[in-house]
Image (cartoon, rainbow, N blue to C red; front, side):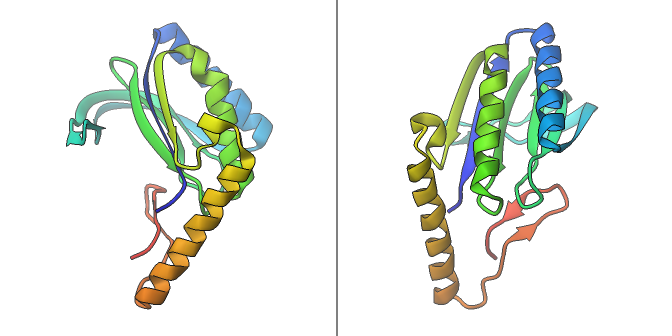
Length: 168
């Protein structure tokens, strides 16, 4: 359930990391999005490959952006090999927020050696706003049906790290 943009890939090199950071900052400033850069000496990144966990532990660096108060943070957090595997849930924000995140990814995609995008709203793949709106509506229908089936369910809940739990 939900509308989430998943992305993973590897940057070309450190110069492209610096370019990506500059582009994200420029885009964020233009959109009035809050952001901050970071570097961690040792962090665990939970990752999945072929439906199996393959977590990373070590140096990370990047930038975090908050596109909308009701979306998850948009993290560009890279490991020591400049690899990233991230996602951003957008369904509690506005459709425009989803579109702007896709626009930002298009702005930075040339900095990647490889980049895979999976957009649950299918906008990345189709550029079809009506299809995205249909997914948006279907999400809320499914959420309301789940609450009707179990009136103890509540949500959404925003966790300390900014991630959002739809219902619990």
